[in-house]
Length: 362
Ligand SMILES: [Zn+2]
Image (tube, rainbow, N blue to C red):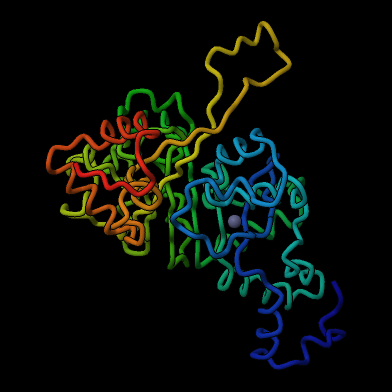
């Protein structure tokens, strides 16, 4: 570091200096625990669209194999799959991507001012429980082997104001929390149960968003929301939850925060991923141990499962309908006792017999 008297930056009034430094600080930044150290990588999806079905991961105009598409669909970073690719391809180990940390070397005063600005202005993104627990609850060990920037990261995180958490966990983790019997066998379940305590360590935190899903093709309704979200109750005042839509035929007010049941949380429901990677169950590694199981991408509609049908095929009255109108129509069908999934299956079987705009009255 240079001496403070040499710094031109320090001769600028604080208010203007903060504006200058503010331009150099990234709005959103991923924090990742990798090989025992905190890494930083820019978030390249700052304006996430909520209603994405997974088709966007098969980028148009680019030649990708189905294997690439399948890998993206399996990303534990969920809607931040592009950020994961960026981190793996270019970002790993480059702690100073945001530019701001370069300024750490200017002088001690600017060093502190940059940290304060980052903690106040940057939205920090975390996509796994290991990073969250490590960054928020571990005391500073003062271990010599910790890198300078790693130590900086710990201090910035301890003072952060805005945090966005994205967790696409195995369904088995959510199920183990509900059962309560096999929790010790799942480190992720144990970490999740401590999430309230971990985030509670971030004493300046005022805005918290948590996006959740599981990794299977079945509906999110398989998860007992009231059980798994209990650890978040102490955070309800600052928390905004983003959860997949519930299935009208599977939701219950005992297990889920349904529209007509009380909830302590602010919840936004979003469309769930509709394209999934599926491995060949019959692959025998003894025959070809060097190869991963063959994988294909399949489509499996979640609520509203009539979305594509309404928009593109059979119900011309719905081709311009909003998502909300399509959902209400499907809810009404379920209420009237129509098995919409069976109806859809029959419809698929008869696909060739229908003209593209023939209305199907059920
Ligand atoms: Zn991101």
